[in-house]
Length: 491
Ligand SMILES: [Zn+2]
Image (cartoon, rainbow, N blue to C red):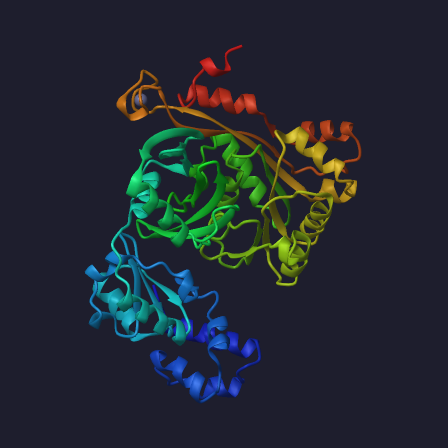
């Protein structure tokens, strides 16, 4: 895990590279104990927190955070005492790793924790001021789980994507969206109803005094050691306010391409597409077809190559991906996709993810980036490979640039998945429906033989000269594998 000597060398090299430390200075630091290095750099060489923290980017098992970004698992204190973690602040402790906040990445206590517990220690590097903040927060609050926490926990445990609360004349109806469908949960009245509404407004950082205009906010919720982003929106209604809470659950981390229900043929095409060093890869489909999940999984796969720098440009950031730099555009404040894209190109990335190509201008810059040596991944709101080519053409892109940059298209939609337990006979697990969850159906075009794309005839040539894997082939394979029902596709 942490090999302090190679890490301190990496840090010092970085500081020399950015010009805040001289090579001579590094020479004088040879015999420094790793845990003292930060202090010496600060006091003897006058480096500030920002310079030091910046230079730690890229160290393994380390992410740079602010105190407000960190969600502390309240149960962590039952596993570690304050004495045991002098100078470190424990954040969570799960089956796979221990996470601590620290203002010194080479702190002695990190090695001690690792030696004692024999598991990886993830370091959240914060400023000394933020570490103080974490300590003061921990002594002032120790709040019990509220009705709001229980409601969100329940929704996450049944894999719901949204919680809906509709205010009626005498009560509030609560529903969950599960597998795309709204399912009634319960009706809240009196004190329960009022308490939940005020908890949502308080934790969602909405203005409590306003009830006559829509608002939005967010709650950071801790679920099994992972921070789940919950977006809250309120809407004035006839009897008060309705709320919808969207759950961005990173819990079902999909790091592996194998988790995406690709068939073997599809998987080999995907591997082919992402093995390109530059070019454009598009994931397409209607709203709610799982495009973002596919895109994030591709990025999680690509980030395993530590020599590549990955930057995303999103609106909004739907999941926090560790080890990847994510940037959220903010058109209201003048930070648009175009500006963002220009800015990140100056950051010398290898791989760029653009949340969505919405217009010709974004498409043009994405294509230029793809043509000039970057691997660009994005989504497009089209139903299949052919309509994707048509949409790209409608953006009036350079036919040569388009033909030579496009490396692949993955189109997808979701369909009910047969219950694996009862084989569609109906059981308690699937509420007697025979189906549980949804599965993606894919169509793909992997382009190895480029062709300038001027006319629709060129599209046909392109598809015939390259590897095209159509929806029907995927559906047939998944019917044969028992994953989807034949009935749905008959006729
Ligand atoms: Zn079943």
